Amino acid sequence: MVALMHALFSHEPPTKTQVMPVQSVIPVLQDAAVAAVYCSRRMGGDFYDFLRVSPDRVVIGLLDVAGRIEDNGAIISAAQQTFRSLAPELFAKEDINEADAMSELALALNRTILQSQGNIRSCPAFAACYNESLGTLCYFNAGHTPGLLRDRTGITELPATGLPLGLFSHATSDARIVALEPGASLLLVSLGLLEGKYKDEEFGLGRLKDTFLHANSDDARELCVSIINNVQQFMRTPPIHNDVTVLALVRAATAKALAVAG
Image (cartoon, rainbow, N blue to C red; front, side):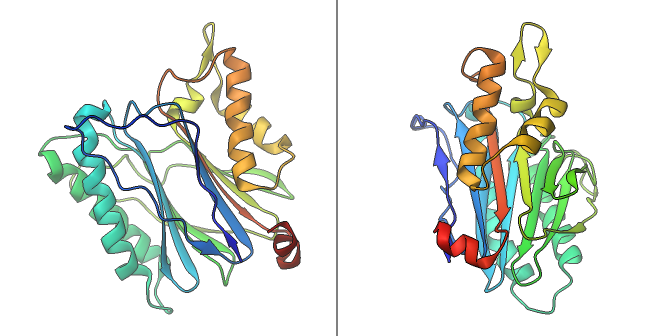
């Protein structure tokens, strides 16, 4: 058993008028590890969360609410409350349909974002339920940057399955299921990371995929840090132009290997 790892490159406390999400309480996974790294101080609407919802399921989410933190803090907080209150209800039972539960979670988050301030606020989002017993990931991608799955066959994109949240009241996001074979890794990044520039050229999805493919570390936190380090090397400066967030889920090659690493 290994504790999920979590890191912040730096943190500045919010002003008294800002409503901020609650920091995640890191759960424990069997034969896997997850980490999230947030680079620099919070400027926009990036936030992530991890939540154990049953003995063999953990739900993760990475959302990017449009706008500055001073304007969208209440929306972020409301979305997190919905995520934390509803996910355990949807995923607690052993015999649930995970795809249906994930679609329902997307609808609820969409309603929360629309209702929290009464206006349209685009929120790309990627949320997933990792089933430890089966080694599967059930996810929706609501207009977010593609998730990247790395295994022995290479890199597979997990593209958008619907529009960003917060735009239309009845918009839906389809849920899909992929297998994480032993040794496979999931990588999620915010748009701000892809938009990091050197001169007029962006870091982009292509460089991210190549960096991920050739990353040597099988440690979730080290993987996140290596991605941000590569962006910084590309930009020739720390990536403080926008929110830059990286989240990684790594399944151990074998249970024994993870136990030794822990």
